[in-house]
Length: 435
Image (cartoon, rainbow, N blue to C red):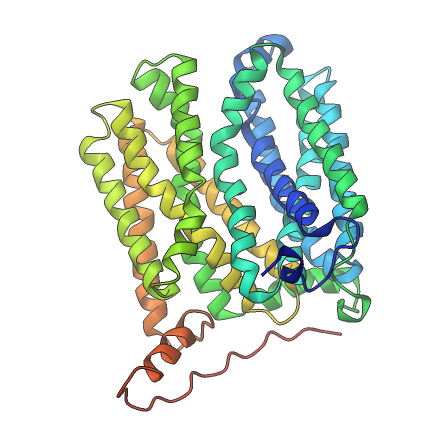
């Protein structure tokens, strides 16, 4: 099957490769913006004559308003279409990045990070929605594997890129680089053809489109599954928050050695989404999810057992967990989007918001007074994944419908040789889509 046959909505100017480039780069700007500048934090505190806590507000403010952007602009794209919201988000992001680069005070930098985050939220929400709009269902997981891996690799790779930039320039250059990425994305977005026709859009008010978030959230299968897979982001972001302390302070590595460990983890984690693409030939999504939860718990136990012995063992035990996190994102996102007949923008917003909010919790829990941060990350992995496993078992045993998981198992069983006749899986009530 050629790439052109992947698209339900043809892209006359971008073509399929151009669309993939737009979606991948659009998905990458958020994690890059999150912490690419963090290696320069000590220089920034000195430059602005301020405290580390004030500089950290640039990170907290970004996370908070990125979440606001996700919730606001996904539903808005259901009302006005993907392209206008995507363009507005990209230009806002690029402007915010440039203004961060020229900030003359810590207050201005915090404010411009907020502007940058709102634009990034719009780009992330629309990018996920476009995948469902434009790609045939049987190829959606493959594209989501490429797009979603950016959310996993980006936060790990960003500090490495930032450290390399600091070898030749100051912290302002990191924001100029982000502004340049935003402008390149804007060129692609101008060539992008709308994927949500006018007759398929939400016809109510903007406020009404935002209220569709509640309609989507009331889909029990959607919310329960999202809560379970979202838990993977809790230990992942905990690692991002304290990884530098583990490698540099606890193990005594140099900044360059720390960057090499982060880069190694980023490169191998990129293979995670493709594990599912290969495994899906032999195992169902239901069984694969159970396996991933078991492997994730085992990786946390291994970290607690041997992670303090050396930086290599800490990295390898975390890598085992990170691969499960990277593997679960693409197919779980596809299943979640499939729960909704309409309101794709609202669904995409909730998916990305949940990952972001749970990741925020992980960053906060990571800095609690643990015996050391290796123990902290290990406990967080085991505890969060154990909660996820309990929730997963409860969801499977409940009568809550979950197309893509429960119906697939039922169909497989009913087609098995000499299998007893099974009742048809209950049809999932479609989420009402107000017109």
